[in-house]
Length: 221
Image (cartoon, rainbow, N blue to C red; front, side):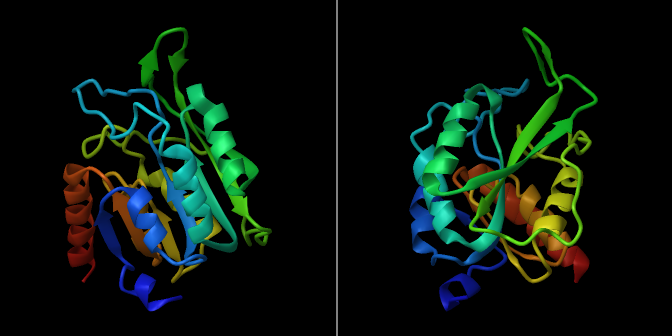
């Protein structure tokens, strides 16, 4: 791995991933775990929103860059918004990813209600090239533990991120999240002795994630 990436390990960069990802060398991240905007103009009950959740202009170029940066024969896991599943699939396939699995995360509560009570989240397992089958496989249904969304309006619980990182990467690997939000995926990577690299557009969430990872690092020291 190049020195450019070595200096960025265990860092969260504040900026637009469309500007940051092109600066990273090809084939330099061992695993990508990301929770991009769902393109749903989401607002939490307390009025918080997600940057770029009102458009899909970023979708194809972001995943094209993620594919380039990901190591050959490696995995990525991406959450997605089911109302625009077609747009996400088009972006993944246009980038070069193969869809090799699908995760469902059932919730024990209703996050929204309209035509149905919406009680689950989803993510796809994507492959670049032909990665080896993991030594230990996991089920594609993983229970969701409510995070409280205290740090971010779409905060993912560590309990669903840890098994993904543990299964699809190894100790010392670099886990990349170009939409890192409050840093949950990065914290999970750190807990499993992986290196991590996050990119976050929103300065407020970047500050939250940076403080969160620094606090955890101090606690572990």
